[in-house]
Image (tube, rainbow, N blue to C red; front, side, top):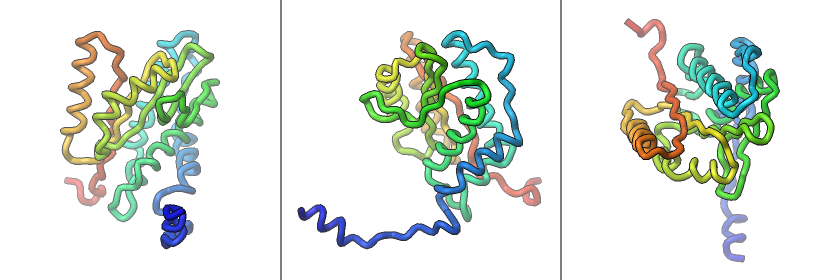
Length: 212
């Protein structure tokens, strides 16, 4: 009762839907626009095995990286110089990946929960070919823990064939990313199932007029 009373007495914080600073409304339109302007042709791929589905999903992740690094998508991750919430980057990936998945008859699920907590995305072709994708900022304090503990749990719960850890570098320091890569290398050496690590440079770039 006390908890409910405290919640009811807490002043609500009104969200500015007109400006939509967190991109809660605009992410879908942005993703559709970028996917439409930058089509990804996967028609030649025969998705008849788990490793081929993994290759397809890897290409989708790499296309997302290209959009962020080379096609201006990184600028939309920031509002007035401030990094938007990680959720926005995840939703952008979802929208862009969904467009490519629809074109290639792949099933994309957002935050499926198999009992160990939700993973960001699961992409599958049939029952046996499943790939999980976890999207995180390098500034996320749980970056390393997510790699070493969370994703293996998700893989066991979702019975996935492969997994991808998609890191958006939002910090100048690469220390956290190097920690993840080191953990991946140790896992490979120990012959463990290790998520594929893909790093995307999402740091703000100076405008063209300031580049020399």
